[in-house]
Each structure stands twice: as structure tokens, then as C-alpha cells.
Image 1 (cartoon, rainbow, N blue to C red):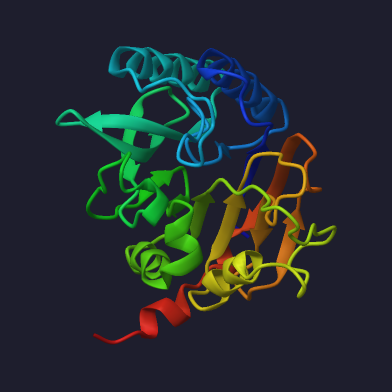
Image 2 (image 1 turned 45 degrees about the vertical axis):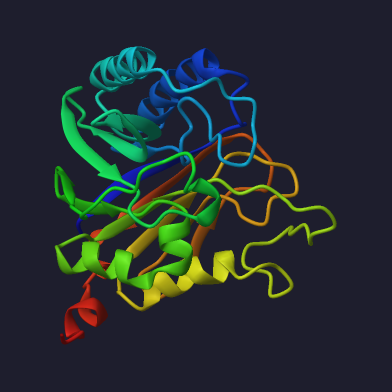
Length: 261
């Protein structure tokens, strides 16, 4: 059996940008202590997801570059690969992105958000293209929030490129009067967690979705098996790491590879 241990950083929404970096570095160290090979963070965790009106200061390219360097240094010290939900500037335009750092602390690349939610149009420029990354024996792709929930082809693209695991950094918070789940994929809940199960099953891949620890949120961090069953989920609103050992032999990618055209 080929196995990899991943950790999902189910952390509170950061109080400010500097606090987001401190929390990320602490979670990287905790992931290493748990024996994880890779740790993933929610969407835009550094400096904080701004599109829903949170009091996040205007993006600063100098600050972002320094923050990314600190996270990369923490990854190298801990010996853990990191997928950091964050922002970056490309040609002076801001993008939602995921920074990928290897366990040696070196940059492996970026996966920008290609399919923006309408609420993000005024703040961000969409990226283009989708790639996969390799850490040890694991090949993984990344889809960010809206992409994974509403655009199945984004996941399939990564899996057809070889991804055994697709990571899904997102940010979700409750709406007034909304149903507050206590168990993962409750049928009374919104469609979002059912969509995560579908993305795994329709592509025969592992799927790992990571949100902040938000009281009352319709989603929490979870790991879904390649057959669409729930492997593990984190209690709603509780900070911590969700750690799981993934049998990569189960990720045959069979259904994704059958697609023609």
C-alpha cells in the first residue's frame, strides 16, 4: 500500500494579516509533529479572505512576499509540504491563489483561482490554467472554493493530469437563519458538502476540503475517499488539525480517465 499522511488546518479566521502568518507557521509545526507529509490551509488564509467584507487591510505586495517567505521557511524547518491559501499580484493585479511549498522549503509553484465567484469580480483577476504538483509519491491538484463546489471539470482536469488527491481550500460562513449542521453532509444542509463527495466519486480520487473554524458554517474540513464516502471530518467551528492517512492505491482515477472529448 502506498500511503501519505495529510493535515488540514481548520483554524479560526485570522485576527489580522500578521496573526495569519503566525497561525500558519504554528500549524505547520503542529502538522510536522503529527507526522504529516503535507498540510493545507483554507482559501486566502494569509492575509484573510476579504471578499465577504471582512476587515482585511488592502493587499500589499511587499507584505505578501515577506509572508510567503516566512511560510516557506517554516515548511523547510518542519520538513512538511505546504499548500497555503493566499493572494498574489500578477502584473499588478491581485489574484486568489494557493502557494505550494515543498518539504525542503522551496517554492513548487502556484495554483491561481480560475473560476471566480461573482462576489470576487471587483477585487480579483482570474487566473488561467491548472497544474498538478508532486511531493514524494503523491501527485495532487488544487481547486479553490467556488471552483470545486460548482465546476466539476476543474477537479477532473487535475485528475486527468495525474492527481491522486485534489485539495480544496475554501472559505464559508453561515448566512442569517441558515441550518447549522452537526454532522457532515447532512441532507438538510446546503449542497456544498454533497458536492465534495461527488467530486471524489466521479473522478475516483481522494478529495480534501479545508475551511476555517467558523461557528455555524455550512461546511467544515473533511477528507473524502475515492468512492465518495466520508473518510474523516472535523467538528464544526472547532480549531485544530484534521489528520488522515490516505491509501493512494485507492485513487485509480478510473472514472476521470474514461471521459472522452
